[in-house]
Amino acid sequence: MPDVNSTSPAPVFGEGQYDAIIIGAGFAGLYQLHCLRNRLGLKARVLEAADGIGGTWYWNRYPGARCDSESHSYCYSFSDELIRDWEWSERYPEHPEIRRYLDFVADRFDLKRDIQLGTRVAGASFDAATSRWTVTTEAGETFSAQFLITAVGCLSSANVPKIPGLEDFRGDWYHTGEWPHEGVDFAGKRVGQIGTGSTGIQAAPVIASQAAHLTVFQRTPNYSVPAHNAPLTQAFKDQVKSGYADIRRTMHATTNGHPFTIDDRSVFDVSPEERTEIYEKAWAKGGLQFRANFRDITTSLEANATAAEFIKDKIRAIVKDPETAAKLADIDHPYAAKRPPIDSFYFETFNRENVELADIRADPIERITQTGIRLQSGKEYPLDILVFATGFDAMTGPFLRMDIRGRDGLTLGEAWEAGPRTYLGLNVKGFPNLFTITGPGSPSVLCNMPVPIEQHAEWIAGCIAHMRKNDIATIEATEEATEAWAAEVNRAAEATLLPQASSSWYLGANVPGKPRVFMPYAGGMAKYRGICDEVAAEGYKGFELGKVAAHA
Image (cartoon, rainbow, N blue to C red; front, side, top):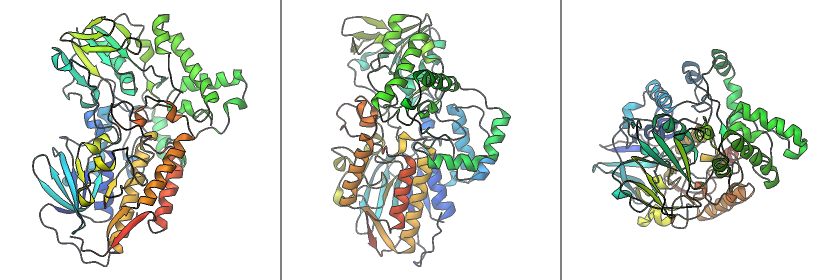
């Protein structure tokens, strides 16, 4: 990380004035604060809506909530000290352990003194005359900073579908992304779960084990590979600590930021028998590495079909009732074209006597009644509790629920009316000095998230150091660079099977009225890192740099 060697006088701050305001105290916000304050010596403030740190993991406390990246990679890699002193207990950490880890990090680097909890940002506006952002909170507080950095997460704006009658429901209802911290008692209750994405696949087995009866309302059947979660052995922990430099290099060199590489062979380089044996071994190992056995699973429909049919056969073999198995295996998109879930006994859950599958693709929900759910056929399901595992207004939702205004009062909603447009997922034309950590147009959700988070936070800190050293007041993406990057994002997506999942939240398809734009960058984390490094090395090409202004 670069140091600040600015020739400008040190800024003099009044109350509420900072070099940088950071919105969000999850993985991204904590590390960005560390980069700016502890490494560059800047005055920074983190504003966090929750009453504790953790970001997405503060809110995601639903039954079964776990990370789907392996714990030794779902952590910060910038500090050998952190790797040495923290030990994960399981292959896939559960939400309380992730929160404990983030608390550990915040305490280790003394971050909490610059984090203001219980503070929800209402809006922010850029003043071209002073080259500063004014940030306002719902409580009426005002902050001023040269730089505004959003660390709001890609999956933090809960999406509750607008189903008629929800306001009439006499039972209790919850969204998995805003789960009560005291938990929910399912004992003796008839529960309806709407949603079968990654969250629903995690939640259903746990809810079923507690509830009197669980009905899973499935519109979109999904693939899933077993997680095979287990406690970590001391030998594995020691191996990670001693070999973390190699693990870090692997994560930085791979497409998705995971600690494993994608095999260079094609599906068709091996015989059908050998291919099945490879899939069987991958299934027995479990986890996201299943898709890494062949290079063309995510790019060739013909190759993908071999993995898809293998998983569908597994579903039909696991689920005892043929009709239920057929519904679960009636999947309409290529494997891994949507976020590929991993599970702990999801399909086995449908063998329980207290679990039922309702196919709402064939028979959609008509309305929520006072006592349950009624389908269009007239069939009714009496329910005491409704669980919405319906995901998030992904990637853009967390930004658009704030009133962010750039040059000449341009709102971010107006700028993104036809879908998000960014340069590198880092900045938006018309919004100088606004940095968007893992914003739309960056690899973000296609990766093991700590890897792109660290890369973005470090790039932003390096950019700010460059600006201060050279008396640069503002940085703003050019229209030409924005257009070129949009074309590159589309090109990268079209080179994969990802756009073929028409109902994917990668396209915004889970939110009615949301523009259908493929949002993350599918060109790979390693390639993206190289592009960002090149942009910086060439004097931040693609950005317009505004020279010479006071820092405060």
